[in-house]
Structure formats: structure tokens, C-alpha cells
Length: 314
Image (cartoon, rainbow, N blue to C red; front, top):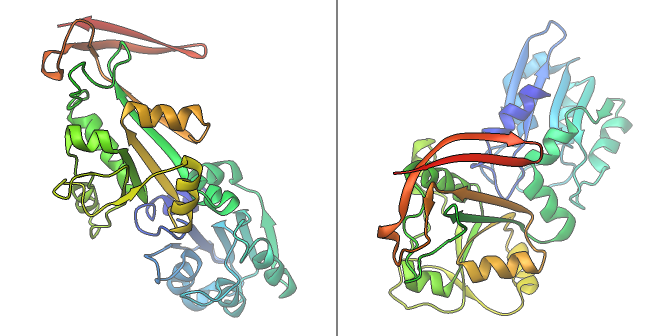
């Protein structure tokens, strides 16, 4: 199952809004074959592994991170392919909460005489598939709030400038988080202040993937010549915004700011995961980002439930 989880990770930027799933087939002689979910409309992980195994799938054990689908969508049911291949045992980490599956995949396999084992690797897969599972259980996106701040807790300078608090490596890491998200949300004030593009093309190209830009969402209205266009301009209750985006198959929503938007999501209990980038810099006494008092972290150590940061100025 560990190998199946690793294979699923390779589909993280490829498969949404479908779940990123990995599958391993182990033949009676110990030979193994791997598969991972392809782009929407392409083969699911189980069928990829079955294709790789061919006739050697007969009598084998299939390990898969998520319950095989049992309904017709863009592709046929994976359960049909598993039964036809003569698989003896299916080991799956978790059941699929999607109402189209929700236990029916496992039931079909058992009805065909296939042993089904549920549970190995469930904790890891629950974490790996958290956005997909949250969306299927609630109808809303999994909300990731990303903040970049100075050591003294500032996300912007008094004059409103905020580029750049963090360094190049942290920004590349944040771009990776963007690439994992189906939509990125900012406030209209951030657009007016920073005029961001919010794209991920460099990250996708580095992974050898064709561009798949997240939907860009703005709370409020922005100038027609803003770099963020094309974007979706929204307003109103944040819960209604999340319901709307969930209906658009947004599994993961990354909230990038500004501070007032971040505070609204936090205050209303709508954040599922926080990602904080802490820069070795102090804002106190400065008026603009260019005048930040920057330094270096000398040591970072966990002390119980807390973190100790040793920081030198200059």
C-alpha cells in the first residue's frame, strides 16, 4: 500500500477534479505492476495497473488507495475490469464517500467472489486525499489559507506593499501549493495593491505537465486591465461562495489574501488547513517592504508543542 500511496502522489497535479489514486498489482510469483490516475477522461489507477499486468493479473492481489469506481462516467467501472481480469483479492485503504460509489464498489467485488480488505494505509490516504474527501462529504472545497508574514506578524507594510516578504524558495513552494489547488482566491484590495497574475505555469512545466491554471477568484470587482483576468468576481456570504465553488468541482481552494480576507475565513471557521511562511525579517519601524529589517534563522527546534526560533538581524 505504501507504493500505491507513492504512485498516487504522482497524479496530484494531473487528475483533479478526479481523486489522485495509486494502484499496485502483485502477481502470484511476486511480480508487481503499477498504475496511477490519469487526466480527467483518461484511465483510472486500477485500469492502468491492469493494463500493465495484462494476463498476469489473473489470481493476483490488487492494492489501491481508494475504493474502485462502480459506475459509468467518462470511463467504464473499474470493478468490471477487476472482475474480468480474474483478480483474487482487492486491498483498499478507504471507501469512496462519493454517493456514486459509497461502498457499492466493494459490494460488487465481493458479489463476484473477490476477497476485499479495507483499511491498510487508511490514515495516510485520508491525509493524502483530504481535499477530495472533504468535497465529497460536504459539497464545499477544502480551504487552504496561505499567509506569508514577518517574525513580528505583519503581512504587509504600513504603505500597503507586500511584495516580497519571503524569499525565492518560499515563493516557489507557494506556487507548488497553487498548482495543487483548483482555485485561488484573493480580495479585490490585493489585486489593486499588487496586481498579481496568480499563475502556476513554471511549476507545471518543471513537472513536465501541460499548463492547468487554477480558477482565479476575486472577492469584489477589479479593473478590466488587471493581470488576474480572466477571473471569477464574487461577493456575498463566504459560505455561499464556497457552495458555489464546490458546485464548480473545486476540490481545493487556496486563499492567498489579503489580511482582511484571511481574517474573515479564519473568524468564520472556514479554514481546513493553514500554511504559514515566516520570513526572517521584522517590520517594526519601517514604512515599506523595501526597508524590512532582514536577518537569518540560526536554529529552529520544536520544544514540546511550540517552536523555538533563533534569529539574528543583519
